Image (tube, rainbow, N blue to C red):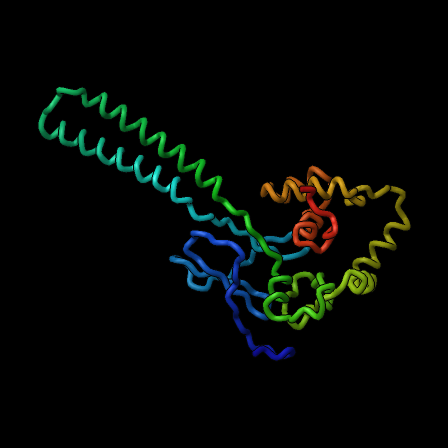
Amino acid sequence: MFVRGTSEEIWKPVKFAFEFTNDCRFEVSNLGRVRSFNKVADGRILNGSITEGYRVIRLKLYKPRDPDTQLSFDQLKEEISKLYKKRREKINNNDYSESIERVTKRLEMKKASLSKKLKKDLKSRTINHHFLIHRLVATYFLPKPKAGHTIVGHLDFDKMNNKLTNLKWMTTEENVIHQSKNPSVIAEKKWRKYTQKPRTKGAKLTSTQVIHIKKQLKRERPMKQIAKQFDISEMQVWRIKSGENWSRVTIPE
């Protein structure tokens, strides 16, 4: 059991709400690190990327193939195997009753068909999954006080410091108060006083726009594209997806 305030690094396995076929697993630590395990990497630390100052881990995972599709692929591979065998036998036996070129052409057509189907299948099974490291740490190491505490704040305002001791679950109101003390926010407010340029990016969304965003998220459209379309940040899209913001707006049945 981790005691808040200690420096010992403790790792916990990351669990997913869906099944995937990738031969890998992930762990998160109370010191804000994430590592992966697979055939070529045994505990490699993942640095991820930076989105609006937050460290994000992006994964490309694949859903299992359904039985009917798998059967179709197995049959096509069997046909290709038989054509390879037939061509090899004809060459070895100098049998030209059926043109070797004709067999080769059929073989290449089957291989092209398999390649095309594999690409389409892989695309349909792709899951572009990502998580914010600070939320991952809080989820696994920091009990949420109440359901209303949906935001994970950085106590020292440093978004790169994802250690457990620097994180706290907050309500929206608590986060607003906390951010009002953020030196960067204070500096930005001072800067705005001396500029006449209106800031339109990130303007408040309407309920209709949020419904459209949620529909696109349901279709697994990349959040970067959604953010660009609605002129908002990826973080805003992520918060809509996670339910931090606009949770009361749902997609009509």
